[in-house]
Length: 207
Image 1 (cartoon, one colour):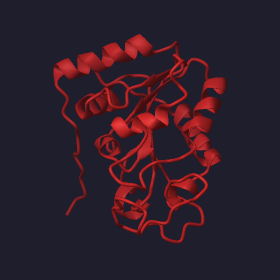
Image 2 (cartoon, helix red, strand yellow; image 1 turned 135 degrees about the vertical axis):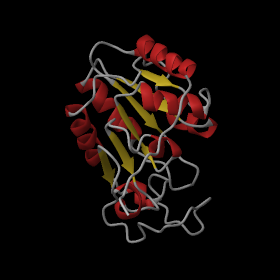
Image 3 (cartoon, one colour; image 1 turned 90 degrees about the vertical axis):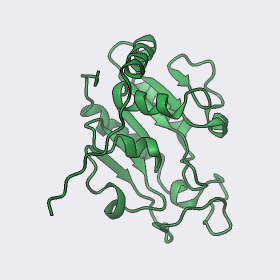
C-alpha cells in the first residue's frame, strides 16, 4: 500500500488574513519569525533552557522575531521577556486555532515539544524542531517533512510511550524540574538545530 500522508490544518480565509497581519506587525526586517510552542498537555512536554537560547538568538540575529505560544500555564515560561519587543508573548491569549493558523501560514520556523501544533505542521515545508519525550523518531517523526528531531542524551527511559500527568512514573531532573528526557536535550543541540533551520528558512509565506 503506498504510504501517503495528507495531514493538514484548514484555516479559514479570515484566520489566514489575521495571521499575516500579525506577522507584518511584528516582523523586523529579514530576520524571520520563529514560533516556539512552550509546552504540551503532559508533564514531560516542556524544555527547560528556553531563555538561554532566546538570548543567543537575539544577540546573533537582531532582526529575528520570536513568538512564544502555549496555554495559560505556559505564561510562567514567558516570564522575563515582557520588555523585549522582539519576543511576542501569546500564551493564554491566542486560541488553539490562532496558534495553528500562525504556525502554518505566518511562521518561518516552528519549535516545540510533542504537541498538536507540531503535528499540524508535520507535512508542511516549514523548517521545524521537535523535542521528543515519550515518542521516538521511528514512531512519530520519521516521515515528517523538513524536521529536526532532538532526542535526549543518556536518558534510559526515553522513549517511554506513556503520557504522564505528573512525575510519579516519569523520571524528573531535579536541577531543572522538568522530565529527564527534556533536560538532557542540551542548549547547544537546540541552538545548532535552529541555526540549521535558519539556513534553509523559507521566505514565501503560505498565504
